[in-house]
Length: 301
Image (cartoon, rainbow, N blue to C red; front, side, top):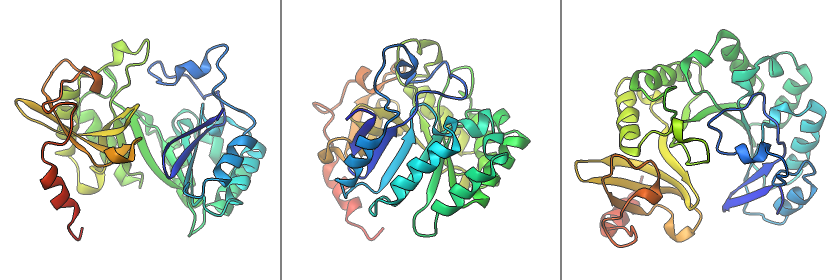
């Protein structure tokens, strides 16, 4: 449906805006900002109807574009409508505005009141923030994130791994430490998607894993909660290990329910930066340690 993406059972994306506070050169959705693109729907009536008729949907992500570019009156209409749907427990705001323009929240008491009203102790609003580098965590940005927290919103951070920007263990470690200090858990480190024009920013999977693991060695447990993953067409695929011969992957989220949690082993390729460039060890990448996976899944944890 136009303006709606429903890839995983419990989560729906509403592409409610096609404008951002600035345009990241490495953006994987840059097609949305081009002429004649009609994926985004400013009228989300059909999207709301879709969510109402799918009671398994507990999470709705407002994205686009950046939802916090929208006026507060428009955000009020959207968030209020979502809160009137009983099975929608979590509303997510996917936004880089806390980095671009923290005053969007700091200078808008009406937006603060809206967040306080609809981020309740039973049904939270989450901010999916986007900080790529510790320099973006300015005093104003930190104050803006604290304002989200003060008004009941739970912020987390996700970002891509970008060549020339944050492709160094020390840089990631510094950002993860600062995020943990201010109460914004690292959530995902994404492998950059092979979108047209993104070649200058590509980091190979093996090197990315080494950077990520190197960063985790420098931080506390609270700062190392991010997962290094590819947001692939088939699902979110976590990169869980690399050795001399193999790359180890696992479906953290899967488009096909049969793939959920599936463990995969591929031949190591130090030049590959995307799943489709890897060669599986076992046929089509089917689990080769199926009995171990089942045993782990059966435990009390």
